[in-house]
Image (tube, rainbow, N blue to C red; front, top):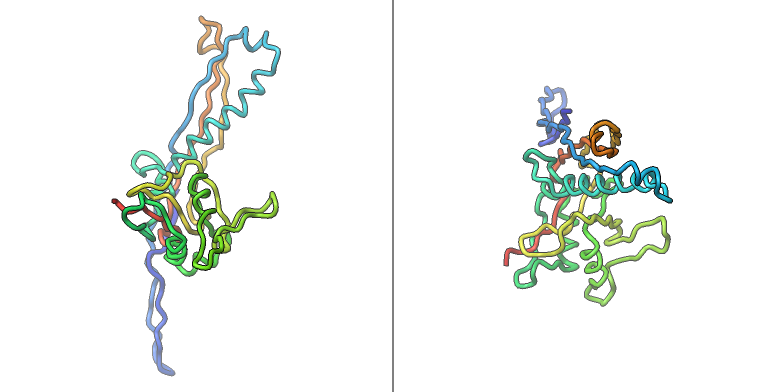
Length: 242
């Protein structure tokens, strides 16, 4: 799947009355999304399926979804882009680098600078927010401004997200914790990251694959790819190298 990407805007120019208006075309390139396959097999004895007192197949179904979900999420978060998806962390540009001597920890000022390192148009789009893991969210909750006020605004409703600088916080367990030379926080318009999913999650069953051992084999697969067409829409905080 080919996805167009805009690398330069058209430019408006002042023209005198009655003069010819010149051409200014945007510069467009593209990214290509493939479909990398992730999966695993699970084998259960026929005795376990038939004799167990619980619905073992009902237990297996969410387990398959969880196992594939974590693997695919990790790929779409930190994938290298070489023979695997280009993860959102890998694709994001470094908007802010932290101070030295603090082991990659961010400050409230770092988060402000990170937010305003985004393309101005991206900051106005719905879906713009923060992404980090639980440990980093805990660190965010402790940050205060110069007046001693917490910059983190906990949600007062279960169906709403916590806010930082008025923008929602999305927890992603595949994000790295703060550390030197590590991208630990993303700010940006996350719908700008394109994910291609082919066919969704498949769960297939074979009673013949391990026939001689009387095992029932379940195969779970999922085909996905991801990339960021417009890098300026997502920026990362990176801890200093020392």
